[in-house]
Length: 320
Ligand code: NAD
Ligand code: TDX
Image: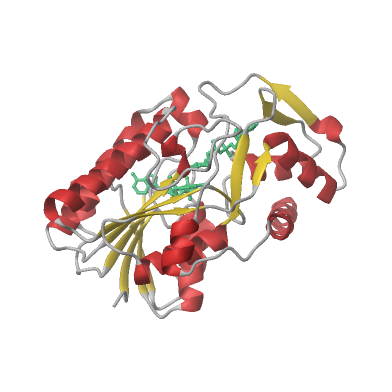
């Protein structure tokens, strides 16, 4: 039974899409705890508040004192989305990444150890595996961790904490590692929303380095469905890779969006490369397909159209 869920970071991009998904598809009760950092989407909280099956608590997961107030009832599961998530920010100032991503995860694991929740899913990322060369096979769950930036290192650290609490205390913990998400509600500092918003305003689109770095893109709703399956059927101690199997260079992604918006490629502006910029990510999702029956349903092109529509409508509302 997974009726009473604690979702952390549910005001962020993937967390708010996941809550929308669960409120539509299930009858679960959801407690959303979020610090409401710059990355949070507070308009979604107003929408969710209309549901009788939802409550919001503002809380910093890196503070065990603050987190204590959230455990006024036992939970069937914790799903930990809360994180500092932007690589460029981690290069400028890594402290919040260490506090939220590592200490925050540690505090949640301690809560599971102290019987405040029955199980936990740690939402992680393909970045922990490092970077692939063009001819390398995609990352599997057995690929070794090889972080190249502070964000990735903080996520790999939290994954190792989760693994250690499973091995040492036999707690029912699972880890999901997903490739690059895109879709509604993503912060405009991230690549795809930035392309769309800059293009809508006829502003230059910064392309790091030679623009040939490759990411494996997945529409956020496909990721949400995968997490729901892991919640229902995932095996404790296991890691599940989730990927879109859509490998595209950054330059290709910009061109697809500019074409959809009927905008000129002259908006593309090559800028200095990101430090430690990973060249290529690609995920092998065969395990979650085989063992849990997940498959992707939204194609890259369809996902891009839905995302452009959402950002265009938001842009029009903001202009009004
Ligand atoms: P996001 O930055 O959009 O949202 C993060 C949320 O966490 C925000 O609402 C923020 O207010 C909250 N938060 C930050 N610090 C907190 C703290 N100390 N206590 C409580 N809440 C806090 O991130 P996202 O893109 O939605 O990513 C969610 C999770 O998924 C992260 O763990 C990220 O590592 C992982 N992930 C993201 C992607 C992607 O492409 N975006 C891919 C794979 C995995
Ligand atoms: O302005 C930009 N120009 C540019 O060329 C930005 C913001 C990015 N890029 C490039 C860098 C990357 O190669 O686009 C690619 C995607 O960049 P981001 O959107 O910053 O994503 P990435 O660094 O790949 O990390 C994302 O996927 C894994 C998420 O932000 C992470 O939270 C997730 O774990």
